[in-house]
Image (cartoon, rainbow, N blue to C red):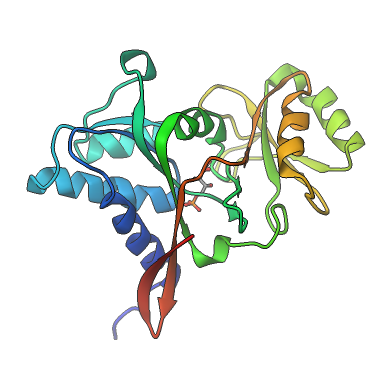
Length: 236
Ligand SMILES: O=C[C@H](O)[C@H](O)[C@H](O)COP(=O)(O)O
């Protein structure tokens, strides 16, 4: 008996491969975080190994991305050693029709925002389940907060009408700790009418480092779908 292929995995693989095909030799590449981008990193590594691609440097957005890049022998660099990023590939938790995003399901949104916004071309890779008509419909907004400010930030967010919840570890006792040593508050809003101003409002609360709303930054969204049992990729 053959095991059934997980359609979401198929979509992620296909979209990761499609994004990796956009990387050109000689470029500096922002390497995003998450299970979808992991396939893009793997395929970039495959292209390097086969000789189809050469002379690239990756800028990882997280410890996870760094480990994967090393695993696939992708040379790495840091922001203080370069003056631009040619292309960044990253996942998302929600995508609206204007290509605005919620990110940070993996608590990596702060570094991702730095790298993705710097890139000349930012490509988002998602499966079709991430598409929403309006941001915040399903996913809460992740907000990275310095630990001593957790209580006042929770109070300030509640005053804004959000439902804040400190993110707890799944295989770890206690809160999730980010790559920067901070904590994450997931904030569910009934509706997000104006993501541009909500992004700024959240970041203006003292103690907040960065939130997961990404507006006006994605150039291309590659969406993995399954049609007639076959994975396909369409663009937004
Ligand atoms: O912090 C994590 C990132 O923003 C991810 O890119 C996002 O959560 C999507 O991850 P995945 O591709 O695993 O759904």
